[in-house]
Length: 486
Image 1 (tube, helix red, strand yellow):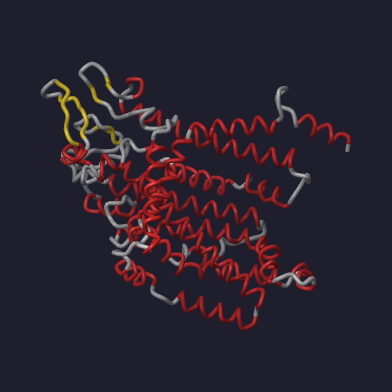
Image 2 (cartoon, rainbow, N blue to C red):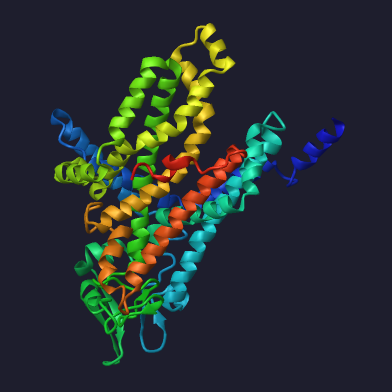
């Protein structure tokens, strides 16, 4: 006991001027301050988008309009807050004046300036991840009242799971791309896609030997990738000194910006659909396991009825019916897709967690809670839900990969997110006519990214499953592989 106490005392001091917790908290405040403007812009933008699609509410409409104005004003104010990793701080859009690069970060050429910004963005993301890991270790070592908990064994098993750590790395890189999409792209969606004829830029005209200006839309027409003779390949410049890490689309727009913005759409739809599916699956599984009998039978029949519904036909019908409504306009139809995926995909996750829920409902602590007169809602939330949470994490991570494939497949068929909103499946669709030509990159790059990201989610699910249940010998059966019924 004395040795353990001395070890704890030695570990509790890393700086002579303060405690470890204060140092860790100070580091977190510093990391947050570097990107406070970007976070505020993201959150206010989400709120502003929600208010923009709220339907008329009669007498309450003036109040909603006022709140929408405040949200837009807050978003505009947040954009003025300087951030370290913004495009304004590290610009890559410049031009060659015959002697040097003008308008780029430190006078570097656009490719190097863009690479510096990308490296700093991912470096910042890994620093935040390291800060979170150190916080968890600090909690285990100095704050938590017990020296050990079953969660420690789960974490330790996952740390030794190479395949799971690979999946975590891929998922982390994907999430960072989605969160920092505006800063990662060599250009912006507004300038390069939505309002290309409302923005102009300067470039070096080698034939005239002088700096000239042109509209972004006009430059895009001269930078199209439509075969072997006319193309802008990955990691090259177009004729207007603009750098394209992944080349250009058949429309001349930047492919990397398209993919980075599309990753945000895929992540929003996937997380929302899986979250709603997990909520429905957990709620119904707990109710069925607690009451059993006819209630459980009714849930089984309901899930069977939902599973036999033709999901593709349902998607086509609902997307067309709701396309002109206010709910169909949220994120260009992304919200509708998330609701459809959740409404038809919860059955697979429910079947996966129903068995563990039935097992925990027969435990002695549940019977003891009943005998003490606790309400069924309290028993299900406190004594049963924690037991199936691990299974929800496992099947949720695997289902998320399937949802991303489904979103890309629907966009490829023209049934997903409505244009011009970027989405990975639409990029594959735009490049399918050029696969055998010199513009093969249009379909190949997003296809490879979809494969890698989905593999990463499945690998992460395998790692979480083996960490929670080391005696498991399958990946969760067919239910997990269906991707939420997609």
